[in-house]
Image (tube, rainbow, N blue to C red; front, side, top):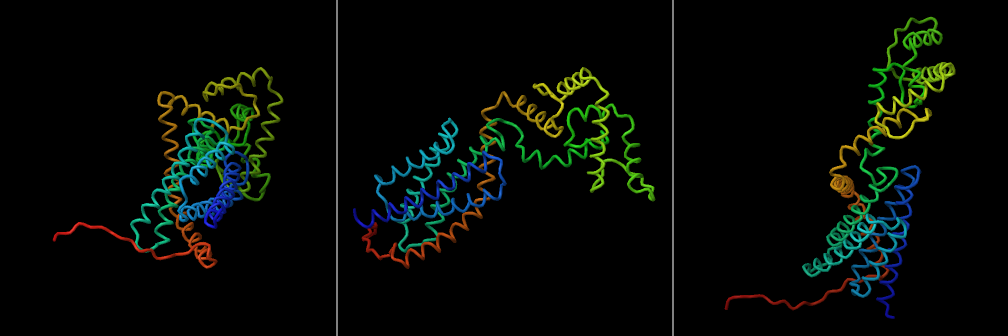
Length: 347
């Protein structure tokens, strides 16, 4: 086995190691309840180094016999990390295909260049590789239980982003309402006669020398304290209500909110609203479900591609530094090759 093959195998090993580390953090990020930044940053770092060493592998002009096992290995690791399903198989095949397309692109670009331009070649190859990665990640985002869970509904992070304004609107319609209150507390709130009087009484007890004229909704620490007081009052009032009345109220609430499951009473109203919105979306898009899935994946793809523009330039900088180190250690060498070229002329 000659030195060139050994170097190519070393680049493959580095690429596979960083790729699998990236897959590990990507799976943790999308399929487990963890802090986003603590997993997103390592994933991006390992993706960057994985892409860099794959581009270096392509710079070494590997034979097709060496490339095919690499693509099959990448596809196998995708199935191993994310499971076997129709979406994952399609995403894995697309990612492997884009790895192959990056090799074809680099080969053609090298033929058109008389002088090696690392930045040009690296940007071309890395851009195609990241496009394949963006498609795979878009499919995984669609399948992620933290985002959509493989169904057409409102992504929970988007709902959480819009919830503060929604909560204030409902608080203006139902004084005393807040998202963390339970279903039973919400039902008791409808029965509570003088929530504004309770607010004024509470504020006077906290600030006896002032004469406030509060209105709901309002902001600040006093809001939190008052909502705790409301919860306490509603839980006390609940003790005087029979289970039959509460159960009937839960059933009416589920019917009003178009929720198919039976409410137990301890569900948070914020989660009830999210389920209501998700059910409405799912029912309204049933007739074009497949197009909706494709559309959502395309939306994820466009968002990732927009962000990856910055990532591509960072990857270019890091790969250029590593390339210079490899040139200095004589891992790579740049040599001049004479080329005979034919052209058509008039005699």
